[in-house]
Image (tube, rainbow, N blue to C red; front, side, top):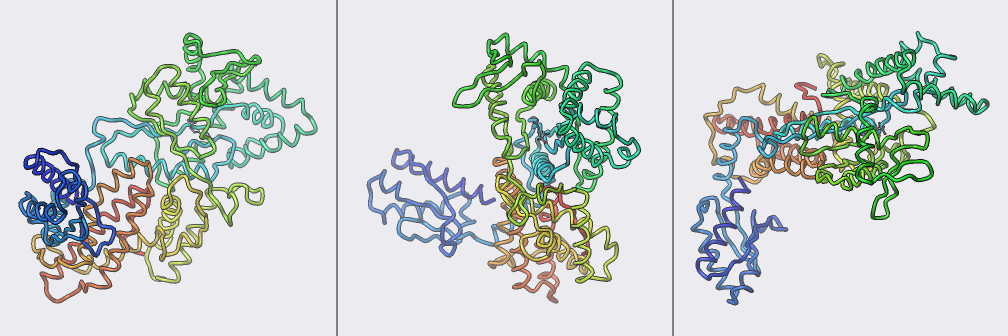
Length: 567
Ligand code: ARG
């Protein structure tokens, strides 16, 4: 609603000035820096300058004209202070309009900007037989939230888990497995055991470097479809994927495709051919490279032994996705450390002459820190994700045992709170920043945490559960106070927030908004007595807080958090 009001002020004033003075002047409508001055403000210096008339005259002309706008009934007070015309909105009319919009919306906050457009998101993408790192957790959480937000804006979203299921590490693992592996152990605990084999291989290779050559040979044969190796590779991939699925299930994350690097094995030659044809591929010390402009190091496409590289597979994946999904944008949710890789990918596509290079976005993110150090390498140990999720659940459970020991389904709720706490802790900061990982802080009900949002929603639910609410008996006059007005303005802002989150590919925009909505609710609840005897008044207040709960829950769901009824 606020946007319609701003737009009406701007366009109608511009039209009026043009008609009256035959001069085109751009009018800005802003939020005053000092909120005590009003809700909106129109700077008039540019008008004074362009028309060369005294300030008081211009102020008078514009003030008079504001009274004649189509939306003038929304303007309660108009004042001028040193070159600015400040406007206070009519809180009752504004509330009425916002709530009407809310009531008539099928899916409040949605937008049609995405209609008919497709966005591919490449996220999570762990490497088989290597740990699912906290970096992969970040990718999973951020990618999922962006996907949900895009869907809310009516984009068609294709979610792809670009599994790291190919590469020389498979030669090593297969060698190790065949020589000193234990099938039963691997089947029981695939990720950990495969990793152990990988580590053991490297230990052995220190004394026995020739096994490196054996591993390379095995990998070569795997590429040539040696049936024994292929079947082992398939098996390792399958058991690892099953393990990942457990994590995805806990997080509530799904994918449309698990086509990983191996999927593109037979799709790289056409890319190499096209690069050759376009004279982009040059020989450099036996290897094939594409040189790039702007001080970028060249993209290494083929090693001297003919084997292909990460970027070659990414090129094949990119063209496959373009041809299969006809995307309007493709997003790669991958850590800051791969910035160069994605810049090179984009540059190669540009050199090939495809304009869609502009639709390739590296959605980068920072490290996870614990006590100021990079988490995954803490004490040289690898953090196991399942264990972290478990720990979060246990901490939440302790918290609940303290706060609400008689709660039913405590375990289940603790799980939902713990997981959501981790998700929210990740998403509340702009993604390219490093984040702190302190489980104790995350699961706290107070502070800028996931549980704080869930708790606010639960608090509203418990008030609503005790009452019968009638949405047809509302007295809008009762919304004329600051505490209600803050809530109404926030409610009105929801769609803008989602659009902004899309623009920056930043779930943090939504996360921060939800924190402020929750805190507006909490101060509203502290100031305004909701459980009053007067039924009309009570109903009016209940209705407002029911909208707040709706948006809180909707927003939390978009972030990938769980909605809780009691805690
Ligand atoms: N598996 C890679 C890693 O863990 C991430 C893959 C990202 N996606 C891509 N298309 N390159 O580093």
